[in-house]
Structures are given as structure tokens and as C-alpha cells.
Image: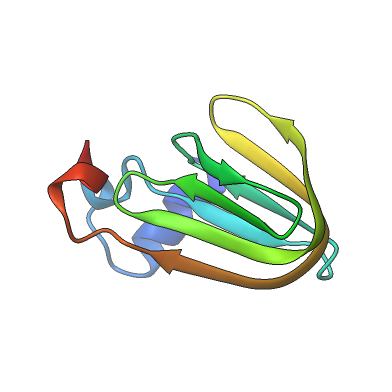
Length: 95
């Protein structure tokens, strides 16, 4: 069982509620690993916005750059100041 699925069960969610979920790991404020993204919405050196299954995740900071990206993971380098989930209430975000 994956670490993500173990967490889903430990916090009392049904396994199907975790399908398509996301996880972010901050690395000492110098980088972030986002798992479960659905693509990049916008990108510059001060802000990266990634699409999630529902809503988006906004990473703000200084000298941000996409160090690596694949279908499931997005690794951002730079000084991370803030990570915030935004959106998620309209139909467009759910597509």
C-alpha cells in the first residue's frame, strides 16, 4: 500500500475519496514536490499555479523554476514563501 493511501485510511476517509488526490512536500522552504497535479496553469519566477483534480494549488516565492515535471509529479525549486489551494468551487475546475 502506498504512503498516500495509508494516510487516507488513517485520517478516516474512504479509499475512493483519495483517488486522484494530491500531496505537497516542502523541502526546507527551498523547494516543493507536488504529487497528483493535472498540469501547470501559469508559471513565472514568482508564482506557479498547478491544476488539481478539484481547484488549483498556488506556489509563491522568489526565483521559482520548474526543476522537473512528469504526469504525476511537479518539482519546484526556489524560495517558497507560500503554498495555497485556490478555486475548486466551479464546474470548470472539475473538468
